[in-house]
Length: 106
Image (cartoon, rainbow, N blue to C red; front, side, top):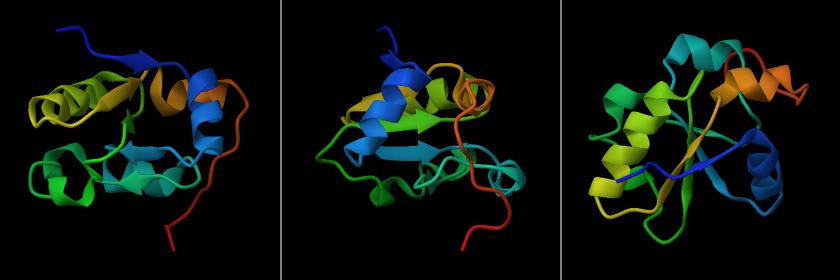
């Protein structure tokens, strides 16, 4: 099965509609910078925290470059959820000049 993906251009449009974005990077990466409105669940914690993911909508998953988020999407798909990988990850988001939040999340 091929992993469904969107690029950061499509993600930006989806976020306007309040799409659910899950960031699976490590806590230090997430604190350094993140896309506004993301829900943080490190990849290693995903199986234990799957109950935090809404089962009734598409979930967009992001990491630094796309590898960990692809693994997370594959896991979520096998759990019967609808999940989509963000190709290029936060690196592509930043390279495109889009805004990020920094510092410890509030």
